[in-house]
Image 1 (cartoon, rainbow, N blue to C red):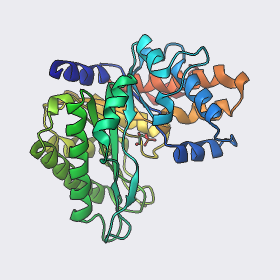
Image 2 (cartoon, helix red, strand yellow):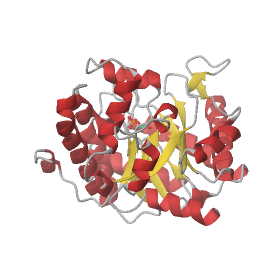
Image 3 (cartoon, rainbow, N blue to C red):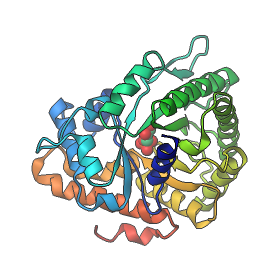
Image 4 (cartoon, rainbow, N blue to C red):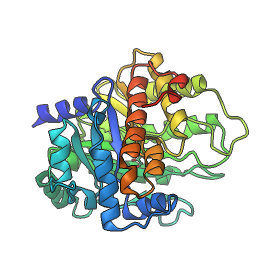
Amino acid sequence: MAHDLEQTARALVAPGKGILAADESSGTIKKRFDTIGVESTEENRRAYRDLLFTTPGAEDYVSGVILYDETIRQASADGTPFAELLVGRGIVPGIKVDKGAKALAGAPGETVTEGLDGLRERLEEYVELGARFTKWRAVIAIGADIPSEYCIWTNAHALARYAALSQEAGLVPIVEPEVLMDGDHTIERSFEVTSRTLHAVFTELRDQRVHFEQMLLKPNMVLSGYGCPRQVSVEEVAAETVKAFRRHVPAAVPGIVFLSGGQSDEDATAHLNAMNAMAPHPWELSFSYGRALQAPALKAWGGRTDNVSAAQQAFFHRAKLNGLARSGSYSPEMEKLAA
Ligand code: 13P
């Protein structure tokens, strides 16, 4: 079992490939569908995920897909369950297992992620449904007086409890402490909060006996807040991000798979590319993007069956460019080339 987990973790960060996060909760996918004027029905959600998962050639750049509870129970148009379809294409299926960020008692503006109660039993079922890895997202907001140490450590403790239970169930945990980049904070502040968060997360992971070789970390990049007047260069983002992670992430962790977190798709690709251009690193540096992989495809689809092929081409193109960013071989000129 231990050997399998390490192998799965390494397969997820195989060279040239990364993860598609398609685990939007019902609330989040509704928000995405609202932007294209499509009603969030169960069938529309199924059809949209089907389009992504059957994109020809995507398996060359996509190592794994994170599913949502509803999605792992759904099937492709021909009746093949999604998890089985993905495995058949050499893509590892995974599942989001947290139940979302809820207000943290006594801490205005801060949240703690819920979902530990009954998790052991839910994990057993996800194993039956074909999942090989899991994801849990903690959310840390930056503001005038936040985050508090209370918020950081409470979330870190829950992340470690989740990760230990996942490994016990034979599933690779993807540990996601997301420091939000909303706000006008500087990149220095982003560096400081990301560092405090990583320190707490790896302290808890070690104390709770999580095997570093059998997990992946899914963090934010170190950016200027989106509202900050001083936006820095791609190279500065790459340098600050790598600096923070080198200080806090053990080399035993096979890979760091970044979230896109509201960056434009092109920025997310350029930042990953710049970090990989600084190689070698102690770990693989890859992607686990939701919005930055899906945005052009979602727009091209617009809820219409006759747009499926155009949407698949748009998804393929983004997956390929991020695949190239895994080795620092991406350049912005490639954005103009057709898929
Ligand atoms: P984004 O890349 O859109 O931030 O989504 C990744 C994810 O899975 C957030 O939990």
